[in-house]
Length: 197
Image 1 (cartoon, one colour):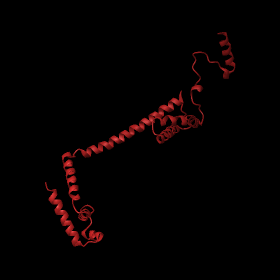
Image 2 (cartoon, rainbow, N blue to C red):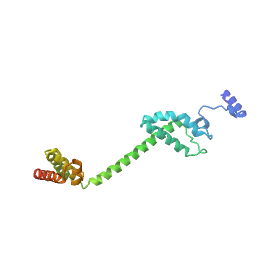
Image 3 (cartoon, rainbow, N blue to C red):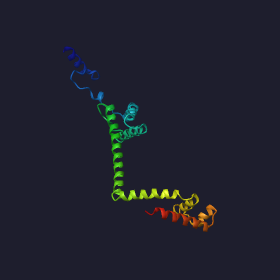
Image 4 (cartoon, helix red, strand yellow):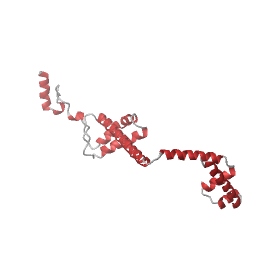
């Protein structure tokens, strides 16, 4: 007890050598980031690499770098005269990183939900029976087209599917327009005959 009293009296004469007694809290400068003009730069150099490794465990590598950059940009928004003062800067920065990752995930989910809801609204009037019938008709039409001679099928598809005129098809195939008309007549009769139920 006497030793502590002597040390306390000595500290009164010299404030730099003040003794901390048991139960007394640590001085604020031991718990806070230094209040100087380069507080952010010091924080960045001290914690950036660890934060990147931490963020990579929770998101992709390219996103991790963006998240850490975004975190320090937000801190820079505080300004030079308003340093971050926390008891455990490493823990604070890790928590802030996790919060940014979660915020991004929530935004992505929201965007996905909005996109999904837009698609559902379009499908509300969707008739599944009509869609099945159309798919069945298309399958039958493909089978019917497969039975046509290759030249006739080519001419029919060029006109009906690609929108070429008889003259353009004649030029491309080297046939006369009259021959193209005959091929088209055969194809239309064949499809009509086989497509009827």
